[in-house]
Image 1 (cartoon, rainbow, N blue to C red):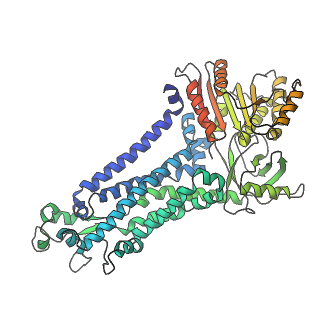
Image 2 (image 1 turned 90 degrees about the vertical axis):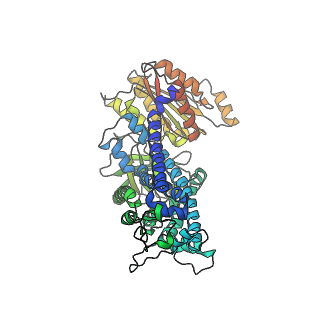
Image 3 (image 1 turned 45 degrees about the vertical axis):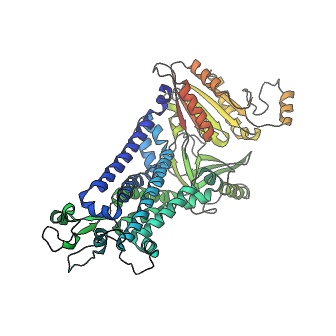
Length: 569
């Protein structure tokens, strides 16, 4: 437990605070509507369903305020350190922005379900009260009209009853502002959540992308939803003159005796826009900034087709500055005007261009690779919009004395940037370089995937040897897929000084790493260090490494501690 606390204490605190606010809002508003004296008559119509509808609404307001903030990439970059210096712990929390975004979305989904069910019951009970199904009090309350001459106001929002009995609730839902916007909001939310499932997002990214933009309809409906004033209460002035506890069983005397004037009711005010207007304005500014960046000119410096159907784009953009491990969003109007896809940059900040490596992994990437392959040699590619750069966990790699870098397949890209930057820092004798040891692990399924990265590792090997720092970089390449012909070839060439796959001095390992052995080795070699573990790879591997970081971290601050960091897009 203590080891887990080293890596996750701040996340746990933040989740507890968030959950505590949710619980407080739910409980507070539940009792406001369940016990509030001005809602006495409303409860006589609706019962406890009133409180069960309004308490989730308060939680929804709070979470709808939060849902947009984790996807405001420029805001996160600002907080991460562009202008405001924040601690490593806070930066690690900002790297979990999408996890928090999903958590808030789950809460919105759950509270929407409770809110919707409670209001469906409310509509049914409103209808029954209007028809006199229950008692004289509910009928008298339901018969109150908006009549200035009689100084009366309505409590029951269902006004039209000259329909078939079963049609009244349905008619109200689809003709009232609150009902119609509620239906639209719920349908939009269902589509957004279902299309965000992992299987759909991975296999049909375009479906996920387009349905997620229903959030515009969701927020528009959300702001309008409250102005229907379906839930009403006794006005302050009326409550002073008309005590419901005294008058509720004297409906025949309402307006006839001074103690029981006809009760007055009002709705609102609508409160949702108070909660969401700030985040909505921030998000509008975010999208405006993205559009401005999209309009800026981007030039192709080089277009290279690498093995394993990996496309390398070297791009130049005026005023573009980056840091190691950062990523950009790319948009190619020739493929889609609306789709933006994230790619980690593989270039170093010291270079006068920025590059990305794009693996064939879906319709968009397949179309882009196809376009680039058909271009005449030396020509410029299609217009490319670039948004970014944006910070990731890998930015912090040089904040640790010892770093473990783990890449899986194309997930090696952020570490290409890091290793290139290290090469430049050694070349320039950068005195600010704190890092004294790097462990690099790369897992690939096929031998061709190693080819485009091997040249960089060869240059690193040579540079470290010339400087007498051969121990600075320890790298291990793991091939997780091979056939019999490859085994035969390796067997014949086993005595070669260099690896038969990569040409490097470090031989390729076959199979998956024994992470217990690797972490134990790092801990023994660095008994008093803080080790940053960085991953760009699948969720399954992330879970394994996070557990190992917790297992091999020592609670004693004088001994080795592993901090887990993962790339999130």
